[in-house]
Image 1 (cartoon, rainbow, N blue to C red):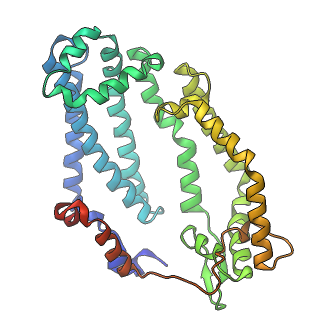
Image 2 (image 1 turned 60 degrees about the horizontal axis):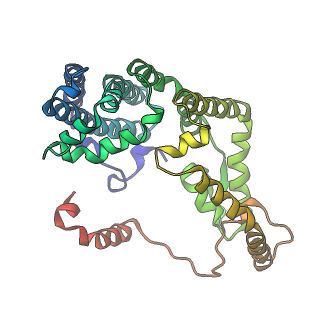
Image 3 (image 1 turned 90 degrees about the vertical axis):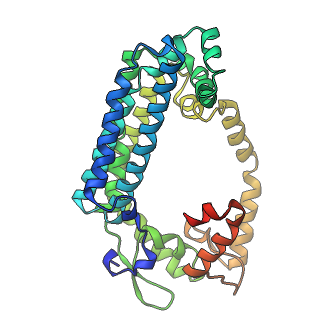
Length: 334
C-alpha cells in the first residue's frame, strides 16, 4: 500500500518537529554556529574551569539539536525511500554530524592530556560535576585515543566507512521488490519486510514457505553485492580496531559498552554447550507440528493451537499509556 492511502491515524506526525523548511534550516544554522563556537576553545580547555565547561556544554547543545535533526530527516526519508529530496536532507545531516565530530575531535585528546589533579579539581565545580561521568568515560578510553590530528582524520572517515550499511539499506528497503504471495484466505498480498514476520507465524505451512522463499529468493539475486557490502563493513571494523590499537575488531566493538571479550566468549561457549537442548526443542516442535522434516520457516509458528491473540492499534495505544502512567502526566503528554 502506498503511504498516501494509509489513514492518518496510523502514520507518525513528525512534521510537528519541523513544520516548515525554514524551521529545519534554523536548527541546521544553529548547529553550524555552535560548531564555529567550539573552535574558539581549541587548545584552551585546561586554561580554566569556564573554558572546559563552555566547551562541553556547547558540544552537548550541538549534539542535542543534531539528534533532533537526525531523527526528523531519517524518519522522513523512511516514509518513502524513493523520494530523493528526503534522502538528500538525511545525507546533509549525516555530513553535518561528521562536521561536528571533526569540530570536537580535539576535546578528548586535550582532556586526556590535562593534569589529573587539575582535572579532578575542575570536576568539583558545581556545573562541571554534571559531566563527571562523561569525563570518566573519556579517561577509560585513553589507551585507544589518538592525537588530535589523527582523531580528526578518523572523524572525517566516518562518511566513507558508513557506505556499506547505507548501500544495504537503500537496496533492501528502496530498490528491491518482493513478490506477491497468497495469504491463509487465498488473497494476493505483497510481501514486505513488515509483514514477513507475520507470515512466518502463520499456522498454514504453505504461507510460511511461500513467504520465506519469496523474500530470500530476491536477496539471493543480489548475494554477490551484499557479500561485497558485508566485506566493506568488516574491513571498516578492522580499520578502526587497528587505528585505535585494539587487540581485535571484536574487542573494539565491545569496548564502548564496557564488555570484555571474555564475557562474549563465555556466552558463545554457553550457547554451544547447550545446543543439544535446542535440538531437543526443535525435535519436539517437529513432532508437535506433525512434520517429517522441519525447515527455517517452521521455527516461528506458535505451538498454542487455536489460540490467536490479536490487538488492535487503538487497544495497543491504551495498553502502552496505562503502562507508562507511573512516569507521570508530563511524560504522557508528549
